[in-house]
Length: 198
Image (cartoon, rainbow, N blue to C red; front, side, top):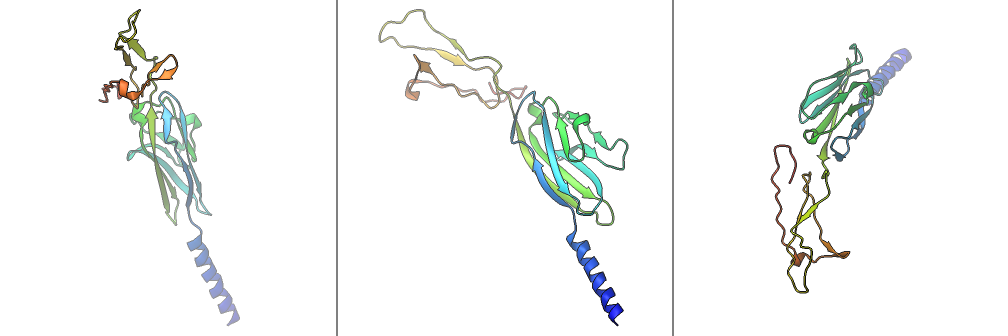
């Protein structure tokens, strides 16, 4: 009778342990903003809690671009995707490194962690990363005359080179910021074929 009770308690504890122990996704690190032409390392930290890792899969906007399966040889594999260039040498089960980001790299990145049999658990986390592009050149001022008399109107044009997001231009005269009421603004905010604002 006592042996049956001990066996029952042991099985109950075993069942409880099986229920409690499971896969946990601890942290997803995806920067909200990065500069064009830079590299970035995305991190996906997890705790298997006595489970065995089956795979790590990374997606951008719903399309898989990197998979890590310990049982495969090699375990890390990349899949072609516009805007995503995986550095396999610096990618693993817990991180993936992307090289030379471009404007097409903007999007929602998702990490999917799956455990092996018999549990077959899956945890998912995602975050959005926006790629920015700074103007390549300084703003250009046109329309300036060599000489002005007191009271003459000043009509100048200041143009920024392409960027994303669109550049904010501020006028200064002799170090003093010009009041916005004295400025006529004309902003072209249409996205060009190169994904730049001009």
